[in-house]
Picture: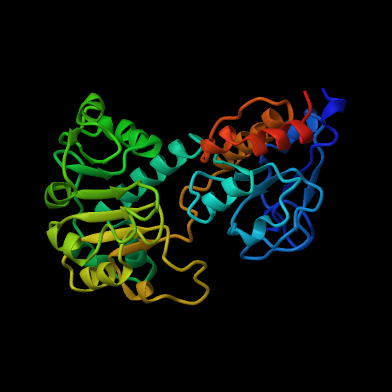
Length: 349
């Protein structure tokens, strides 16, 4: 049911949600929730890698797919109340600038846990069974070369999770029926007791790298995690081990990983995210047969985009109805009198 009092609250979507015909790329990103709440939706007039000042025009909320958000993006911010990241990562957003501008930043907490976990498990199986290579053998008439590509099963192998938030927990759950060894978890944000409660063993990063057959990265990119896995860390891994990165480029030193793969110092890797994106020409990775690549979309599903969209749209609805939404990154903004004044002005009770 439309609510007339919300007519002054508007939402703008970044232009990369739409194709050149101004049709949304994705069949369902939750916009029906905004329609039911009587909240108008507009779109940015053009796509830019960084949101430009005032692109949202009269909107009070932005749902942002890929553009970066800087301090300059937020000028002026008198009538901008919230940015909803279409996902859970926010390394592309200047969080401090948002707070200083009295702009709330929200993410779609929980919406990507299952799809990223499924993609991670799929990649682990694809790597251990040489699925990419065996497909290529058939396509190139090399049937008898199959003897050189014996796979390994997951039973009796050890999973190592680097960063055990919602996605890491979902990976543990999905792999719990594969008769693997007790998983290892490195996460400085969790207590040893919390990790043990998940059925996992709390370990240091070095210990995890030495013991794990699969090193799966699920931590956010920040000052502490940038370059977390570099040459020294890769040298600790078993030559039979695999590295999977569905988190962010920059957590793994790409040059060091490329060298380790070229020299067969680890068995292989699966990479969904890169230090520089997008990649618009064949990369150096393309020559390697022990790596699987994806354009930062391995977990993209219709269900994931629907659920992310619903989370982002619900944030807008909650704020328009003067409710504190879920998924706030900069919760300190709620303590700022200037933010509260703006919220009351833009969304009167």
